[in-house]
Length: 58
Image (cartoon, rainbow, N blue to C red):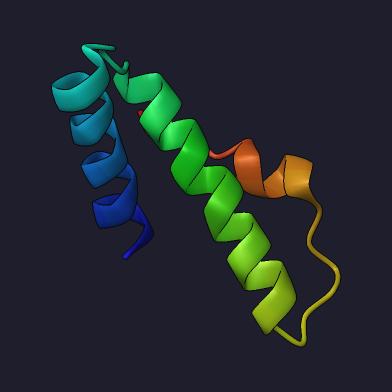
């Protein structure tokens, strides 16, 4: 859901504000929102944001 929402927001920025969005910024947004969602919904409190966002897709 987060990925779809982030892509939709990027599409709206391009369509309505004529502002192109880079894929890196979409991925950063997905990671940040995903961490916030997970950390607030999960009982696991050990995870740090740096660990979560350091994932690199190669």
